[in-house]
Length: 192
Image (cartoon, rainbow, N blue to C red; front, top):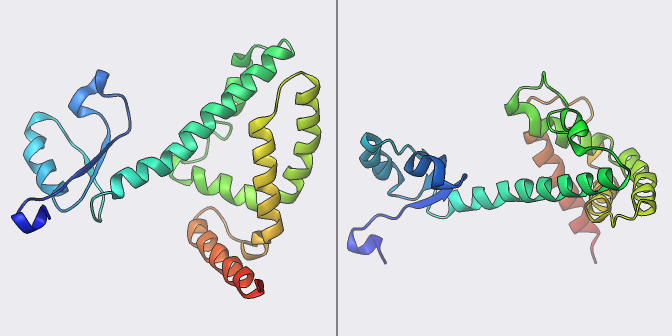
């Protein structure tokens, strides 16, 4: 409707609270007016990263990123509560868990964790059983740990590992998508 009247639409997704950097905050823009907005606002220091695609794509990316952000927040809370229950200062754990693989390039980090999660899913799900038991004994309800165990068990049951044999971090995202597609197709064919 807006386009029919000659208007262009822009979807902006802020990734940080704007109170500090205001219009200079990191943001994504999508929609047919995104490049125009970027050009018009550049002299004022506003520099959104333009994402190809229709309006709504920027907020979809933010929603996907929030799966990680909210999940890591809840996981850190569960870790801190568990540490407190056994008399350990959570800050002692920070160097071990916040960035455990310092040499890993940032653009390879997600692929690293995904591939490790798939390749070792069965073992990690089994290890979590004893960790969950210990956390319960400490008086903490292991909400995030239990969800993690369930996710790893599901990944193990899907057999994604067989599709990633010999795949390194580089290009693993494409191999992962192919593997998910193959498993989905196989499971779809087996469903009555």
